Length: 412
Ligand code: ASP
Ligand code: MG
Image 1: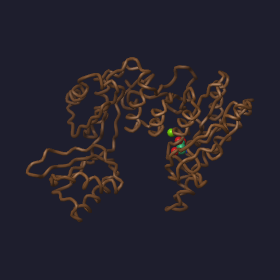
Image 2: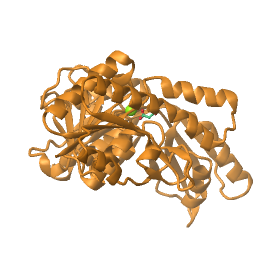
Image 3: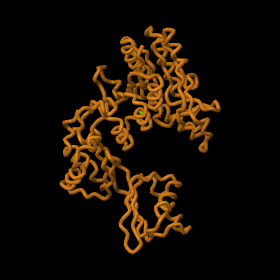
Image 4: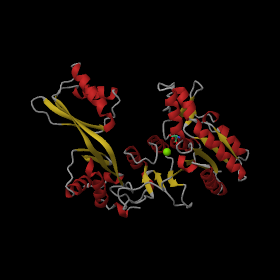
């Protein structure tokens, strides 16, 4: 029998009615002849509640107990879904991570998956079981302790199971009906994409399109797991949702697949630092140690042995960055004239694998921002992405203008 992995996120299993609805979806696939592995999240809001209880009880908690507690929401949904399927006369049972056993490393609260043996579950399929309902987000460490994979981690559980069981596809059921050319709240011209390449999805996921956990897309790309993102709130159909797949499966590539944004960015400039070997290491080493996620970096041309260094980071890390730089100055590691912070910027990016073969994408992007009178403060590029920092107050306008310029309303 071919295997299908179906993952239901928190809103798709938020209460008993929704679990019943999701179970009907599973029944449709069972009727088509699949052996189905269902990965479930906790009911929506549950994990947040559990995290809150941990923090209230022990602010400097033991991470092993944190994992024991916050993994429990998934156990409940797995058992309930198995019961619901049994009520529908579908042979099903639940698995917690340790029962598989899904083995991870010992990095509690952000563990990495090391192994998923298939024999245990396959043996049950061999005995006539039709659905294995597995609690997402959790595993067991080599020391025998319960681990979790980081928030949003059941996406990663689902992709890892699809890879381990060589599943035909991994369907991710969520509360949006697919991946869009941009955020539909910013422009009603946003269109759902039928297909998107792994690499594009990776850029869009890490740029803040919160559909899939970034790690799950990395894993899908590595093991070539075809992923489908679709809504559990709409009627089932074979071409529903968005297929995240290898770029070879996408025939016509537009230059740009989507426009992404990140609202709460800050731009920080160290004015007049000595331009000498090791200066970048002396700046970005302490920033990394302070836990600042530096994104863009620009170093100016130097004049008389001094230069300006600009970088961007999330606004809520500005205080940490300022302290790290002040400390580095005090200890004599670096010497700068002034640190200037601009807390009012946003990042807007265009993403597309078609950029590799289409010329003029950057020029078109800059021209359309110019036409709106939007000043660009920092530019960075990669093979399939161009990002700019602009004043936050123009963010929506920029997204709309770029969506128009690349004619994304015609995308499908
Ligand atoms: N329940 C976990 C969370 O809320 C894992 C998941 O749903 O993916 O982060
Ligand atoms: Mg999620």
